[in-house]
Image (cartoon, rainbow, N blue to C red; front, side):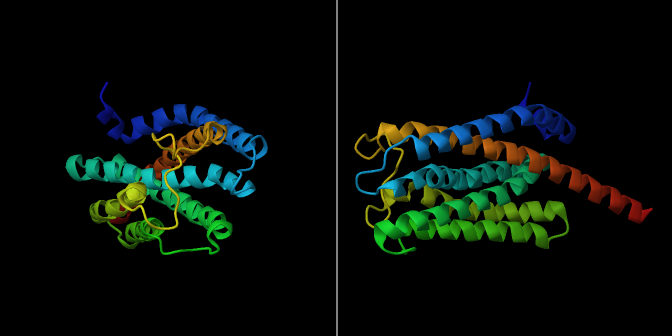
Length: 242
């Protein structure tokens, strides 16, 4: 079996229809377990108090905001190289999901940062690159909506995705690039001194799994919707010519 078989819209819809219930239930289970565990069964931090528990929303949302764009980059490259329509539509489907995760990350970051830094926002390099990534999400979605021809829209948004990937990578690795600024180091790190304590780390991993599964479920569902919408537009255009 080849992965390229799923470039067939019918096969993609049939396969994701079978996977969606299981992925959705697993997402709900992980999210509920991780958030309840993290918020009610972990102690307050000795410096940050209860504020540290924002980590269970902020870190998974920020992680998926970046990885959603990377997923869009991969599917956009597949479109450019192999012209598989499902990959272009999957990138389009992922954009609103990634943008929503970005908003959650920015909002929870402000809530977390205000009592720690004394301000809701700082032009920290890491925060700024993340804000620019959000603007790229908005531009990507606006470009899809502004162009009537789906193939032309896919071409132009793929190029935009390539450019925006610079800021996705900056957002991901800014913790390594810049040691200065208000933003703390990586919460998940191979360096034991930087990594969060195990009491916070385990529920955080469950929350991250929940966000990953939620992203997959939403992209499956939205890609199906995009495929059906494209099919409907094609039928309407054909009827208009006859």
